[in-house]
Length: 132
Image 1 (spheres, helix red, strand yellow):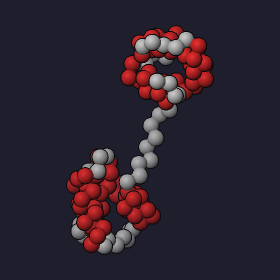
Image 2: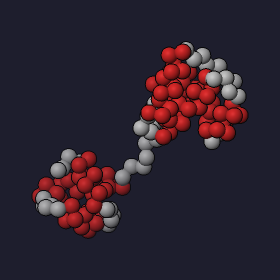
Image 3: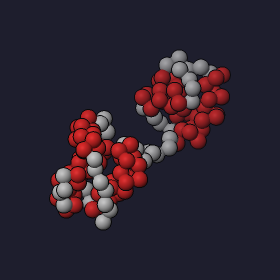
Image 4: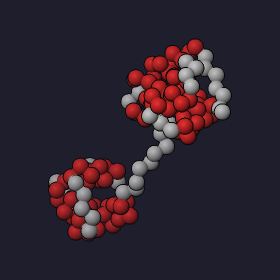
């Protein structure tokens, strides 16, 4: 069992953060630790927050190791874009053939790489490689 001690200031911060964080994942972490600070049994915390005992243990370890700030860290990185494999060739192409619209860039990307992306994804990719 992981033992953690909560000061009154931390309890107040957990109470506030469980409703005011932009990330629902962080809100759930704050809620679980707030319930833990009230002395609620782990079984009940897991039931209320709909998490496993392993997840609760991970939250407690994050708090023990990093404090309140440690709970705010999200370690999910997502998947890397397949377009990044073609970054250099696309960047060189677009410097020589400047696209006027996102649709034009979208068509060029599909012809060069065979990868079809939505206009929103194309805009994000172009911005990521430093193009406007």
